[in-house]
Amino acid sequence: MRVCVVGFDSLDYYLVEKYDLKCLKQKDYGKVEINTGVLATPTIWTSFVTGLLPREHGIIGWKMKNPFLDKMQIWSIKIGLNRIIDRSQILTQLGRRWVKGNVPNIRGRIPTIFDYAQRPVDINVPCYSEDVYEESRREIYHGVGKPITAKPIAEKAWRGFWEKKERVLDALSKNWDLFMVHFFLPDIIQHILWYRKNEIERLYREMDNVACNIKKRVGKNTFILFISDHGQKKGLHTPYGFYSCNRRLKLHEPKVTDFADIIKRELGQSLKASPSK
Image 1 (spheres, rainbow, N blue to C red):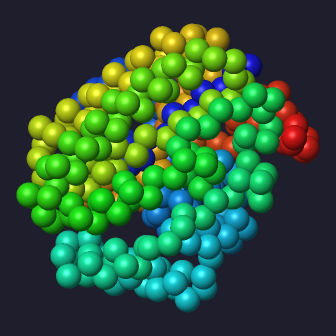
Image 2: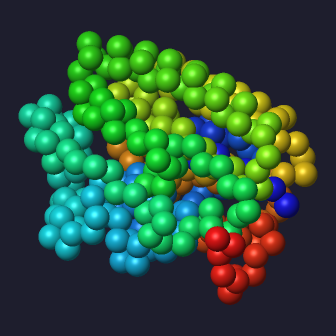
């Protein structure tokens, strides 16, 4: 069985329903509980590809696990400081300095779903792929709360997306048994243009179009999973994601860590089997 995983950063369940996006809504779809305790892209996607919680894989935010920073994040969420940071241009400048440094990478360090495949392909998978999206991450900080700056950032992000879309469709026609791609565009656009409803609808309809193209390219016999690491509401991350599968998974309130074992099973690996490499 071939498995195709498409990660949409920040794709929100309620907006997929609102716009009734037929290709994204497959046979089985719903909300995903983000049980990582930290609503950060590296943490959640690492938990997705490993099936492990942050205390086991060690990725907290954009750096390796740090107990002090971990506690700071938890308390900032409890008292609402994260909302202030997201809205404040002054604190955003400080935040930009905070996230400087290399993005952590778990490739070859921790077993992932890719280790259970014979011919895996990965494109822009956070904390795993070799192609890092450092520039996109920093550009978000420049666009938050600044309409003049946001427009050129959004245009650049869209251009990068169009190029990536063609690269992905081309790669799908090659020989693989596990294919995973991560699209960062929904996170960028919703962070900097969350107040422009027309732009958000355009974004979601284009993600549905991508889903349609990918489904046509891989065929019905492929196990197809669309997944997001969280949603967004008014530019802020929400503690739930979105999933959609072309198979009946019979899941009840799934957690983001549940999907690694499902993918292993579809690849023909038992849960206790050793990685193929």
